[in-house]
Image (cartoon, rainbow, N blue to C red; front, side, top):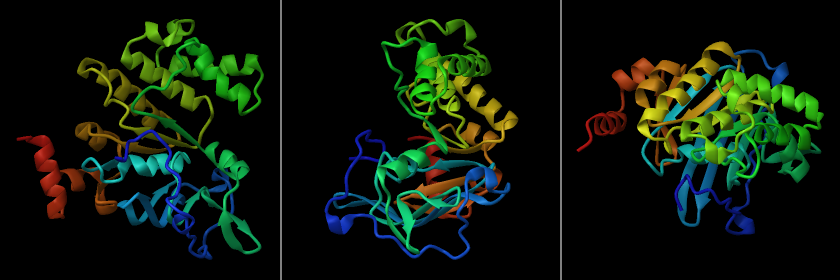
Length: 294
């Protein structure tokens, strides 16, 4: 199984279940709206993820500050998409602790220690994040508008009227107001991905996760999706974590770029430094092969 496989994997055995490390004394217990800009809103501490005998994340330490736009690059199988899927609780972890908005994601604090999280806790934590997948994952039997309103009504408890108004707001943002009553099959791939972005935004997340959002698109449709993401980055106070192979776009949109290989961060820094003058030989090899494929 690779790091983009859509199927959640349970721990291999009880011994492989997430093994918490003691919570750091400085980690606040708060929600994201109480965090100041620049504080970590996502924090991985010695996180291990295995698929069978394959270690996909190898004691990963990684953090994203509130309001930061971070892009993860790296070869296939390096753990990039797994990071996003773990954050959305689509994959479990085997060891370590992940903090989101000051609260443990896969654990709960009980009597001063960390215990495995309940489904109620996971459901509550998911509200912090919205995710845009490689495949659009729209409901084919629902109109564009209903694809966007379904979760706000069913999960957040919004009235149908308020959810519809929210859907119209985000359809306008992604430039699809005139497509609201169509079905996904009547849209191009780029339009479907823009609907998926509007759907994620309609949940009012504090963190947006993008998992190679243009990889399933024809080349001529890539620009329209990247333009929407760039507009979000420039106009909205969202924390954004992006996995992409669009290197020029990553350079333009990111505050920081992280190069992953074999489940660890090999190099990270400002996009100009990492992508133009990388310090590590492995980063140089990857970028050279990517820019000048054999």
